[in-house]
Length: 523
Image (cartoon, rainbow, N blue to C red):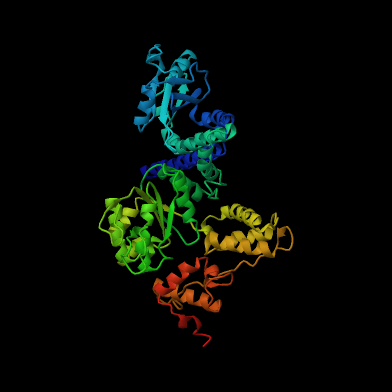
């Protein structure tokens, strides 16, 4: 076998192992996301986690007011809470980014220096402990110890897999604690505050995102990677692919999930108002500023701000946004005081920002500040295996809203849905399903007007070179004319294009589409 063939074989093996690992991580996260009590947790740990990590026993330790508490354990521990003492091993795990391997054989039998859970494990004939600190959720400190009968080293331990399921383990512990609080009717006020967190984590799919295709599993893996950090994230993809859902999932899995994520659509706000929306203004700073107002960045203090359609941000404001990202401070319009902000930025765009930078429409330094961690969302036509899942999910969602009880789709309709190119992506699919629920004649959707957009092949004879600006302008004009100039409403151009009316109006203004253009043909 030649060296090239060996390299190719090695590459294929690596890709297969990576695919297998991603599948395993996805399955583990999915299994733990449905757990709501300790019995279920112990069952999943013993069945799913043990088959991958091959440990003999486990202990979850957490920090409480009285000291260190054993949250859940597969071995019997004499003292459940170590009161008013410093647990050196708990602190070591908290301060270490890597799992710690501890040889129980070398530990003292003195109860004052060795934690009771280690002594219990040692007495049970266990040799090694591997400790790992889980990400914080609402300031909870949790450490997982896995115990082995035989000697192991860090090389024998699947550290990468543990890191990728660690956030979900923290969320699961939090969910169990909230459930116990609810059952005992304790701390009622705190229950009301924390209830939405439990509801968010029980969303269908991966934190409300539906999909089981390989492309979406890779997206879930990336979300799990970046969520615990404070890195800026740039989400790109076609209109209607669900970029806001991705941003919400990242926020929900972050340490700031207890605070609300602040959203702003950079395309839906007029250019003369967006500066005030982002950075705030002082009273009297301009005509109409009758009171002081905090901007979105201040509102997102210690939380996340989601800047949708960041590619539409006017060039003159890109410099101000860059300064906020660099200095971590804002200055309101009309003010002379710098206000410190601790805010994570998640931006989204349906544009190719690299091309926008090359064309001089987007600042390169701002692009590099935003593009710390990139997530590209595939178009719906590139993940066709997810269409049946999405269609049934959207059917149930709008069934509840309309009060109808449509059970499903005929096989022919489902085949049509899977073959449609869906240029408006999930938003177009949702609009179509919502419309056909209302017109369905029985409990199964058997007829559906799935629009077919035919794109003629490009040849040398019919090729006409146009800029993207021209193509977009002409296409929007044709749709607006088709809708007789109507922009909003169920029969408006915005609905047909899968866009919010404000976004379409903003696009039309930027493309130079005036009112008289909309009716040229009729005139």
